[in-house]
Image (cartoon, rainbow, N blue to C red):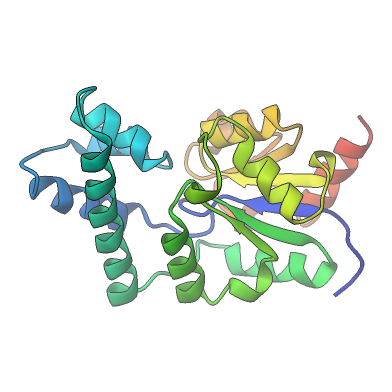
Length: 222
């Protein structure tokens, strides 16, 4: 691997892997067991947020922390069961970019709102673990996106300054977290153009070949 060029901080769900269906099924089945029904639109509006934030909204302000934590644990165990049983594939361009950046000397980290066990399960399924020098998950931070804590923690673990980091995200809250943390961002997904990122693409495979180098140079010129 070449000398350090910069750092890339990757969101996980919806950015490197399409796990939306598994999360929806896991939430739906878990909450049905609690006698609670949720609409798919409610699930979509919460995707990528921390479980305590999601469940506080769905269960109401009188929901106790013990119930929130218990339901969250059941849901995540169900999600990992689906991942291991039915498998996951990287989104278009994900494998190519992660491997290329690794070879070119970029440091890489996962910066996710998901529980650590989920992050590990997905990296194991994708066989991506060796490409990343750090992972940051829900247990490592107190505040969720759009607070920049998750990205600042990841940068610190990579020993990279915020100005050396490029964030890749599929959610507006993540892009805003990158901005608050003093980092450039790439928005991906069906709504990439609406996220407010410095660069946007529907798929990672659509990014120009110099995307990361361009953004790092732009950041350095500030």
